[in-house]
Length: 286
Image (cartoon, rainbow, N blue to C red; front, side, top):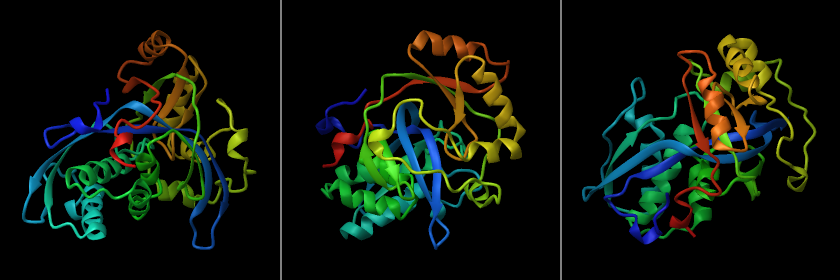
């Protein structure tokens, strides 16, 4: 799935994989309103794909704008411009995104796209910025961007940017996509959200630990999420990823995951993917 890093070029399609939150606890809130979290991010082998075309005029152009999203506000454009500024690069690029991940799904689609822009253009523009600096640039775009640049399944603290690599067992996942978008800010702003879960040490995490503190809030506000959780839980314990709307369940073998997906009600959108050991572009930064 991942060619050697010297084979990545302008001709390549650069993957932007989804992430799952294997658990997500809200352990506090900062004075500036940002919530303090603990979570484990797991990459899976399904996601968006990006292609890049070189420009010599310094312009950044998104050739595939999303409906209702101004290109100037798109995370891919913002990522490219931040990278230009940080490196004083005078080159430009055309960006094409093949979207598979839903908006407002809790799978990190926009954040993953932005991280792929940072990793790919750092390589294609031959900037050689270190991974740590790319993570710092990514944090300006959103709390989930740094983990995609970090490139390993990770235990996260802070607002999600303090990362420690963790080993996650080989697994397959069924992911269901309820037909709605969830605004992350609205879930975090909910007065009923639990904000005082006791923190743990990264070394104390184990597969199956914890829950998603945002799930109760989102499922109460969006019955479709609760329905999808109920359907999938008949096959294996299911939980929501991020602030929703997508839900997932873990399986030890692919055949069991595919069987579970076939048992979902007709018309339910979903897919099966393997858990990844690392981001496919991990080796593009040092």
